[in-house]
Length: 483
Image (cartoon, rainbow, N blue to C red; front, side, top):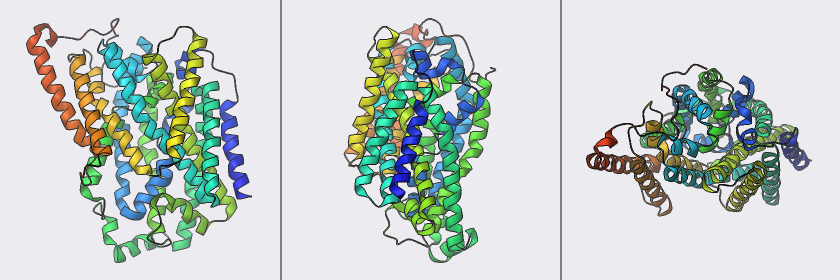
């Protein structure tokens, strides 16, 4: 019965995304005519805060590292502050220039199609692990809720097909409809599991009292395997990346907002919305008193729910978790597809573009599904994505200026250097302790950029001035924009 309820919920989520008319142009499919109202825009952007990482990974980090898990709240709050200023500026540039992808920004601001193509390649490649994370998390949720390993694989396949269907059909509006349901379900689920855990163990004071007596390290950011270095480097690099909006799949929802004022209001409240993440953190800490220490981190929240709640409520938790995977997965698939079709493979005609987008959406989801069926490292996938995409932060920062005074080639060389270093540190399994690979890679990125820019200016005196944007972008300011 539990399995039937969960799969029924997954089908309902997919069906909700397909309801409504089909998108018929790239602009409608990607940015919905740039007129999404306040609440629709809010749910699209808030959805990034409550994903499978916050549902599974964060509780797991709290279970093994205690308050080290609060790094997520720290960097997301910092990101909201950064986006309060950066978001409206990007929105104004996108509206005046017709951007529908992050790579459009790089192409236009630095007057360099080559840089735009590099940004598209980097964005698509480093979004794939994040897409894989969502599908992996969904499968784990179903497996842990039902106890069926076969259910894990089947749920990933079913959800992948549904995501492909509603993204291809409705684009960003379909994602927005599902996002509304997903956020409501996530809040309900987190409250339910939090209350169940608190009742089971005797409340918040008892949880932290027991930790203070038996595992005091967990009440600091110096827990074994984490430590201050992990906390600070993770907060710094993810705060930089998220604050400068280096995630390509978050640009279409930003461009789709009706006004800059809508974005400012969203980011004002998103900072407070991050406090919802205390729920999985407290659940993870409470699980220390309930579960064996050998429990796998990603299994903590659902295993705890099984031990403290009836099956009917476990089904609600699992369906909410599935929604938390499907909404970001849909946005990421659309982000990858738009990068490829808009910036790498150019075709003419709206119908051909939309057909091509469907192919790329399906390819991205299916490729991530294949990898996801064999990979379980939720937190590792997240940090790989953040570290790789953070290498675009210098280019975005310089591109936001009123007058772009740095060259495209130095940005290209720095970005390539940073990406290569992230890949080397990750796949060569270089021992860097608890340092974040993305922050380490950002140092040679900036060094190479600085050297290349100095050489460019010394060889071309005129290069000290403004780099002309492609077609002359309307002047703006990094200060708070008016709608």
